[in-house]
Image 1 (cartoon, helix red, strand yellow):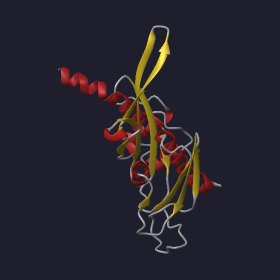
Image 2 (cartoon, helix red, strand yellow):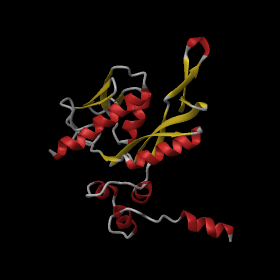
Image 3 (cartoon, helix red, strand yellow):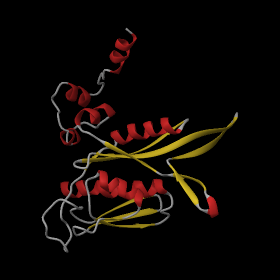
Image 4 (cartoon, helix red, strand yellow):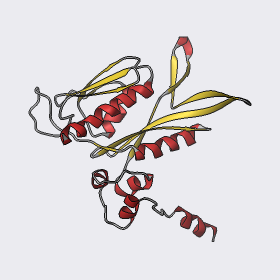
Amino acid sequence: MADQEMEEEEIWKPKTKLGKKVANGQVTDIVEALESDYKIMEGEIADQLTDLEEEVILIGGTPGKGGGKRRTVSKRTARMHKSGERYSTKAMSVLGDKRNVIGLGEGTANDTRAAIEDANRKAKLSLIQITQGCGSWECACGTEHTVPFEVEGNSGSVTVTVKPAPKGIGLACSDELKKMFELAGYTDVWVNARGTTRTRENLMKAAFNALKKVEEYKQE
């Protein structure tokens, strides 16, 4: 009886117009949802329409041996209140289906697991459509393996430029940025990052903003 009650609680009951269209079978593709007149306001929409893979970004760090820094998946922050300091945990994740969509989310909660779940939920709400192509003048293979043209994005003091690369170059960027480009379905890109790139939140946001422009420029 208890198991049956839990299953009933897990049934998705859409609250938005787009969610209801998905539940009714009127919208059956994630690209169709993104190109509709409605914004994705429920994470379950992405769950219903596509299979997303997840990567957690290493945004935190603790002092390591020899003065180095050991990267962690979460960052602990403190805020002053009348009752004293209050601590919270921040996490960042990127979701993608390696074909059509990519999303980036930043979550905050009392513990790491809950912060990652919050980041995943927000990443589903931030999904954007992406396109692969063969935009490098050094390559004429005609396959979809890189960005179709050069794009640039900013966040804080960080600027990220993403350029088409010939097939076989691979992902010429940091390990954390590789997570994003792999989930976007790219296998070859040149990436140039300028500014305070040690702040990984801004680094990832700048790269995400660059990928947004791929579709923006195509629609102009």
